Structure formats: structure tokens, C-alpha cells
Amino acid sequence: MSSRAKRLLEEKLLPGNAGKPLWLINPGRWGKVPGVIAPAEYWDELVRSCEGRARFWQISWTGDGAVQGCEYHVWTPRRGFWRRLLGYQSLYQELLSEAAGMVGIEDTLTLEARNTGLKTLILGPGGLDPLKNRNEINSFLASSIR
Image (cartoon, rainbow, N blue to C red; front, side, top):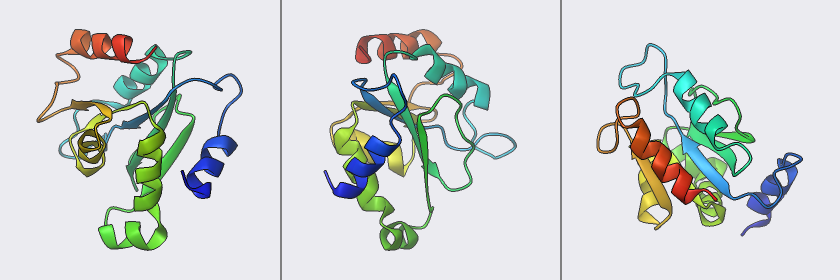
């Protein structure tokens, strides 16, 4: 792992989270934006339901809302040129190598996590409906986060 990702993981570690697996979350946008798959409260509750068993970092595009309960939020520029120029793409890939899993909407960030072989749960089109499949989602999280 690079010194940048390692330093960031160490600096942002909250008291009581040492030794807990790192999970990444990508909720996408919410509010009055087309394509929203779940309200902010849904994501807040998802993180809260795993409290004590995992630490969550939100990895989202610039402009997305913040999920409550996440240890840290990393917002990346939407355009690939800026992600590469500012070093976000390499940081994101380094964080993927340190994470135990990821939960998120079906987009570039979450699909990249799945393609690396990381334990990934995709919500929304192409995955589970977060509002209709709560039991399956809770079951995945309960068996994946120990």
C-alpha cells in the first residue's frame, strides 16, 4: 500500500475502530436527482446496522451527500481526467486492496470493486432493490461482516 493510502487510513481511524474490517460504501446521489435508488436515511441505517463490526468509508463522486456514521468520506471528481490528475484513481485502487468489501449503487466505482474480486453488494438497477430486498441485504451484511 502506498504511503498516501496508509497515512490516510491511520490518520482517520476513529477510537474504537482499530482492528475492524474496512468496508467501502457508494450510495450515489439522493434527493431530487434522477436515478436515486434509496433515500439518505436508508444508507445511514445500513451503516448503523453494522456499527461495532466494521468501519465504513464513503467513496463517492463529488456532489454526493454524506452518509452518517462513516469514519471518513472520499469524494472523487466525476471526470476521469481530473481523477487521474489529482491522484484519486490510484488512491481508490489502493483503498480497494485494503477493504474487506463494498456496498454501493451500480456505477464505475462499485463495478471496479467487484471486478477486483472484492466482496461487493450492488444495489439498484443491475443489483438488489434496496427497498424491496432488505432481508437479502441484511443477510449478506450479517454473513460478510464479522
